[in-house]
Amino acid sequence: MRFPNLIWAIENARLRHYELADRLGMETSRFSRCLRGRFDFSAQERESIAVILDYPEKWLFQEPTPPVSVKNAEPIHAEALA
Image (cartoon, rainbow, N blue to C red; front, top):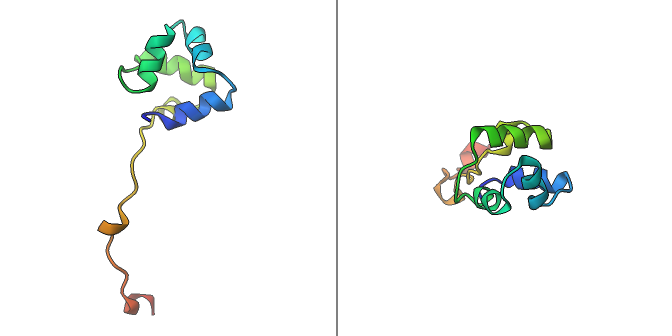
C-alpha cells in the first residue's frame, strides 16, 4: 500500500474511491492505479484531494517507512540499565 494515510482519510470521509475520483473529475481506473502506485497523481490532483478531504497534502501522500529492525538495533547491556 503506497499511501495508507490517503486511504485512511478517504474511509474517514466515508467516501468510496470512485466517489472521490468523480469529485476530482478523474477516471476511476486512473485514480485506482494512482492509489496503488502504478501511476503518479499530478500536483494539481494531490492539491485537490487535500482540499476535498481537508487534510494536509504532505501527510496524505507520505509514503510509509518501515521501522528500524530489532535485529539491527544495538543490544542493551545490563550495566547500561543500572
